[in-house]
Length: 52
Image (cartoon, rainbow, N blue to C red; front, side, top):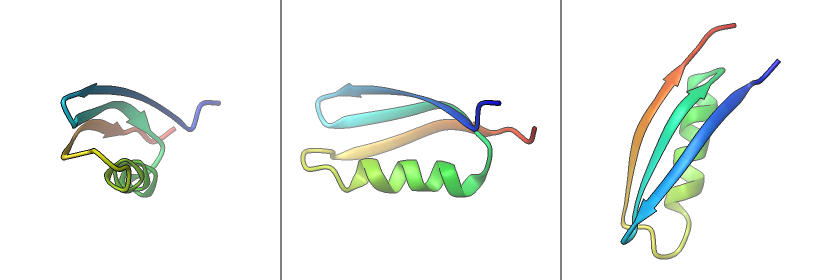
């Protein structure tokens, strides 16, 4: 069983996360991790939480 499948796209410091995760906590963790990376200006999320 897949817990999460998150795709990452970057352009000029803007990061877009898309895909799905098993919980909101996983989604928020991914966003927080990306925000902590030097050079990232903006994080946009198009992730969905899917209950299995």
